[in-house]
Image 1 (spheres, rainbow over the protein chains, first blue to last red):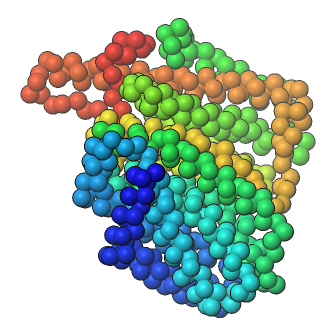
Image 2: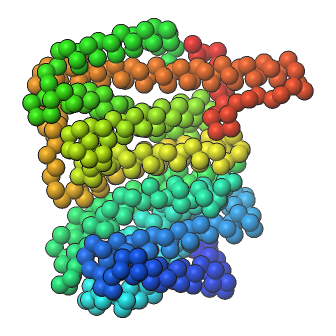
Image 3: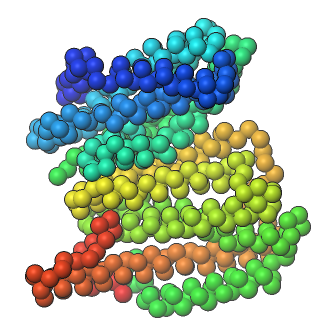
Amino acid sequence: MATLRTILVKDLRIELRTLQSLPAMALFAVTTFVIFRFGLDRTELEGSLAAGVLLVTVLFAALLAINRLFVAERDEGGFDAIRLAPVDSAQLFLAKVGALFIYLAVLEVIALPVFAMFFGTEAEALPATLGLLALVNLGLAATGALVSTIGANSRARDLLTPLVLLPLVVPLMISAAGAAEPLLAAGGPDLSGAGKWMASLALYDLVFLLVGYAVYEFLLED
Amino acid sequence: MSLKMPSLRVMAFATVVVMGAAFALVFFYAPNDADQGFVQKIFYVHVPIAICALIGFVVAAFHAVRHLRTGEAIHDVRAYVSIHMGVIFGTAALVTGSIWARAAWGKWWVWEEPTLVSFLIVFLLYATYYPLRYAIEDRERQARYASVFAITAGVFVPLNFMAVRMAESLVHPRVFATAEGGLPGSMLFTFLVALAAMALLFVTLVRFEIAAKSTKGAISRLRRALDADGPAGQASRIAPAVPAVSAEAKT
């Protein structure tokens, strides 16, 4: 637990001091909204279209952070340090999941109000949507930390991570879209059918957290 | 894949015989489908191929777990070959599925058929197995990462089928929705023979590829031993090398 906290605090401190990922993610998200406005030629979005625009934007903004997640470990010898240290290497996985989750949550706190302002989403839909996005973040963080480690230790870093990650998060996106569609519906949020989608999101998060935790040590062995 | 398995020659022969029998049953024994007529017979090819591909992926995950547990390279070879053959069979399943969709529903692709859509997503994930292996140079690390991928993807398969099925709001008229239970006896029998034939083909091809890899590895080792300055092994950079110990145990 101490290891986890140390790595997590280190990552957050680096991000606060250098601001490498978060501003880029927020800018990327806002620009993507603008592109969707013209790509779809719509000024108001609701239902499945709103869910699609929001989730695709979050996913691609997440890719920016996921690609950079292990840059310091790779370039500055962090992987070697973890290997040398007498600690459970899966703590690195959990710390990175935590860091990614926090980045994504901060991104959404910025991007979701902008989305609502741009496309006329009802304000009462926002809290539930943020809650839904928290489940999405957890799944993205678990798969992202796993795939990013593979990518960081390969030659084709920036190519491999999105290539493997995108098909892996398709079920997550299916469930998230299913839950977000009634939340962002035209007449205000409808929570009645959200339960099964939330359950399937939670199952996805749990399964990939466990898989990542179980296999992570094999990614660091050398 | 123990030593008690019949030789490759016997397996190849059995595959040809059962495959011939399956096609004979498909064309001369199984009745034409009442709704779709003759074109429905692609079912006896499409469904067994898809089942074999999925089982290949599951088997690969199983070998990957054993590889990570034991660290023996042969399990990585088996996982690799299973996924390799699964992707080849998967391509065939998607092509035959597309042809069937065109014939039955008039469109080359139907999003309303959850099994086909799930299969496409699974296929897209497993297709990234090759670039993943190719991007990692160190052989031992490549094998470990490939096994981690095979396990992750193996877990992904059922989750994906669940999510796609949940997203299906419309119930498309599915010819075989009732599965075996709804099939007439003659069709079920033909289907099972076709499935056995396809499974035999899958296993035989997997064993052939492992045997080919063992031989290739043995040859390049011999060549290196003969001529230390000569060209090094021509083995593929993404296909795992078969360890020396197991080379003799094969074929």
